[in-house]
Length: 207
Image 1 (cartoon, one colour):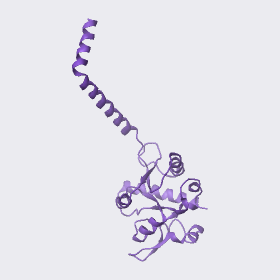
Image 2: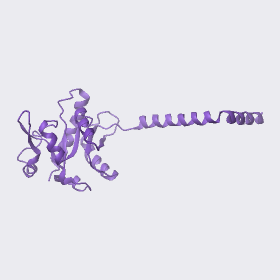
Image 3: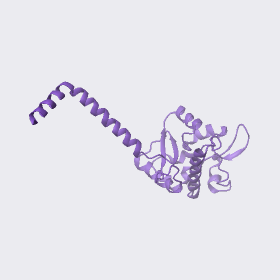
Image 4: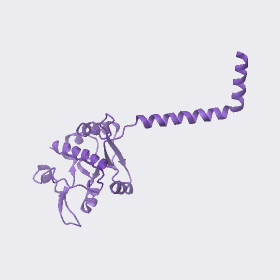
């Protein structure tokens, strides 16, 4: 009986080895994808950073700094800030239009290009124009080309102690929040509520 089983296995492997290997490979791949889908952490706030190189340690430092102040929107028991690299100009424009991130880290030239067209949320209610940071960085106060209204639209990361410890050109970087009035559904507003909490946290640590 035992020999018959061995013989049957040998014959099966001889004739169907290719199909067995392919089936096992596909099965393991499917299990891996399913596991990653089940265990993946969905961010409660998303921040895109444009044309900057961040190490794993720097990404962790930023996420650990921002995560405690946000709400667990998806109720998965984890407060997670997602950081997404944006390398291309077209990708940046799409990110702004689609609001795939609630906040962006951009350089001064990029901020100066986009801010007058009002894609960013005004910060006047969160930081006064008499704040030392605003006085020191008048470039963050911008007049709209359409409404002709003037608002504070960004925070300079050079004024934040955490970002000053990172190996990035923080003196030329600004963080902005995209306009929260463009997506009024409840879920989007919860994401923007977290973005507001992050911005308030950054303002508190300005020095």
